[in-house]
Length: 90
Image 1 (cartoon, rainbow, N blue to C red):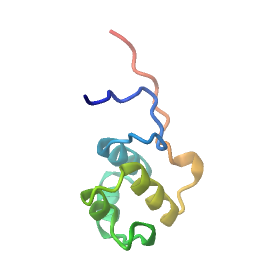
Image 2: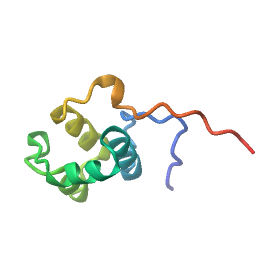
Image 3: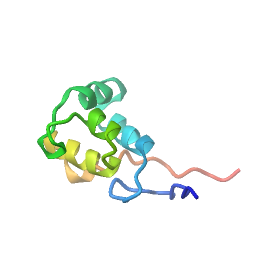
Image 4: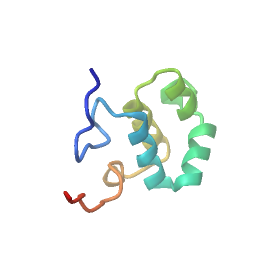
């Protein structure tokens, strides 16, 4: 049975989903550059694969995100995404 994503999930949640990886990448690098970067930057920690190749090979999105952050020197305080106001209940 699938587990519902938790509110306020961080980049270090073991169950990080692909959609969270892409949201974090787009927050940090911008939508267009995130996809270009993830498809063209070969990362030693991922066996020389790109982030896209690693995700396609089944590497956990969390591990791919951490490796991408390391190679791009993303500061720790940026690795959890942009601060966004909490959603309000209707």
